Length: 332
Image (cartoon, rainbow, N blue to C red; front, side, top):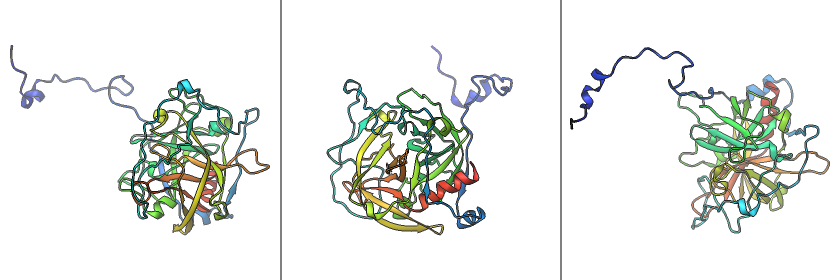
């Protein structure tokens, strides 16, 4: 049997082929377009020539059923969790990406009623995160989930509301623009300011909100600390393999740490609600009497703050609805 051709001779042995024509199958990969990016500054807000809102309404499409708690997946279809709680001492400094505290109150659900249909999975070249519709074509997710590029832009991102395994009842849209206060990369952990402002608004190429609806938003108040008021939805890797939505009920925020950037204030909200990788960007939301929709007050950011066993963190405060309002105003 003869030996393989030496690698140094490969180039000389390859037969020339005609150039591929655009659209020919098998010639190159195809990806969603990259979004433009906008780091919002006080000048952007001044250009609106009006006061931006800190209290935004949601939208419940006509005829869509409403369910206060999502329908859990039948027990025989639930996937075993893949998490373990790290041991350590709580500290302060930087945060990792997740943390679960016994007992784990999260459960998988499969529900296309409102508002559960507004939550969905954010896909990027680097992995996935969670998000929620906050406008007709506006998704709130984590800044550290954005595939920021060294060139100053961002790589492609898609959003699929109510995804469950391979079921995508409302389709998928890609992001055309990303609005942020700052870029949180997260590779080396997040500092306190990054965690406090760890949210962006992605504008989609389709008005998915007209079909699925969207949540309102509200400035987080420290008056709500230590009260079991909040729901949370995300796509964790440890439950549901990152392709099934998971609900955390009766969430409690422990305390806040105030931070500032771009002329705005926001909170790093310290909590011990169960959160692992994939839940980043997932909303913490509550219902108010008289409102037909819940309102987002924060997005999941970091875990194991200060080291293994430390608390988790969410980003929220007055700058969160301001960013949503700006994005909705300039790109309705």
